[in-house]
Image 1 (tube, helix red, strand yellow):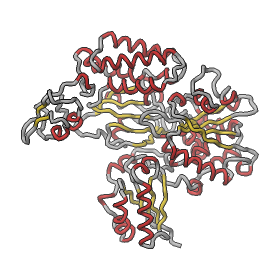
Image 2: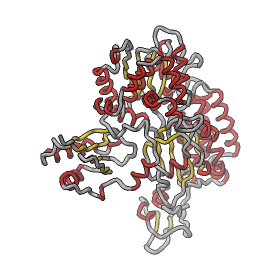
Image 3: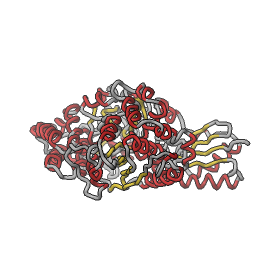
Image 4: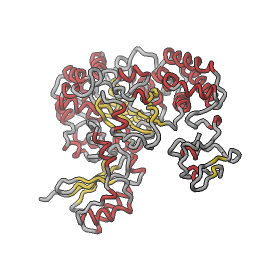
Length: 586
């Protein structure tokens, strides 16, 4: 019997927002009109990581594969007619060298199923080895299982980088009649979408990891704490839980054993602080999500006062691969103290943005200029990268050769965190960036402890003064002193790390702070109150882009002449700066 061809359509949040459902409808209708529905299978897969949606793959019965990007419903009839029927690929719609470069330098373990299988079809997960690790684990001694995870060197991928095996061991050794497993899917960093894509593209990997963890520590009950802003992920998780329960992979007497373990989804209301373990536990218990003093740690006294194991999505998605391939295999990837791969959400001023999974020990430069493809604009140099989200730090281009591992990144003043990586170029104001991240943590602070509640607010107010032209020299020493005080005196991880964007920019970009304070000037041309625009004739190439972008008619330009700016008409909207590729507007 001849095997059918397959058409894979990326239908994660990114794909759906770009019109994937409409594309699928068009594909189905066209195949029906051509009497081809019985020869081609249309499969909804998760996002692959490179957001050039709508992405579709044509996999012929012979096994040849072609990837199309930025597909609209209007493109479908041409693809069906020329490629499916006449076997002639449409070159101008095919993914090009940027697509290939994005995936070339990656080692996809956690993301191996994303964009390749239907997350709503458990059979496809099973065909790729799904739940065999759980079956293997159930035949093992829990203590040996924990030892295997510990020897692998896997560290928590949610931010702190604590040994996963050691955390499991603490929970295993805790004496209690009840224990719990929690998957922390409360992904709240701006620009981070690793957990969302895993849940939408490969939910069974997380369920399998939770079940293995439950067996290892002696738990019968698990919770996935997922932010309500991820409705598509929650929908697919519910479908996965239902199908796994029907097949006997979760629930009572799993795979005919004496082990029972079930999973419940709890929706979070979107509080960033609930990413912290004790605040998350309070939220599940129906209380306000606020952190508690530790110790006792959740492994000793967690959910409803019982020992609780908390791992994030990416950590749990690694478990099945470790059990299947062994601790030595996982430990062979990465560096001495940072094993395995790490998924990063690469965003900002690079050519290719999306999810990148690389071995630990890869340099920042290799990520940015490898999968990232380098600067988004050829004539504008990259300036910095923000690592670790609002809890992380900004590192200058001079540190791009730093290895991505927990210790090396920590020494720079940033953190690996959950995997946010935002790249910035010369048009980015580092003082403004620090203010942006601090504004986020100020609004997300639960207010329980004084250093975080008052100190962050005061730091934010000082940054406003600096960016609006009221900065003073003494503000710099104040920011450093207050930032270090908040880091050392705050109750939880939010306060302990919130000053990092300010302290790191002060360390590496103090000249920009001084320009704002002493010269009342924003070098990047971002802080509106400090702006007065003029065209630098030695850089202006007379292209007229600024003239076309100006909404107020302030830019005066004729073909063949340098542009000029009428300051009386200028509304300081910065449209001209955004349009200029040559940094010709000061």
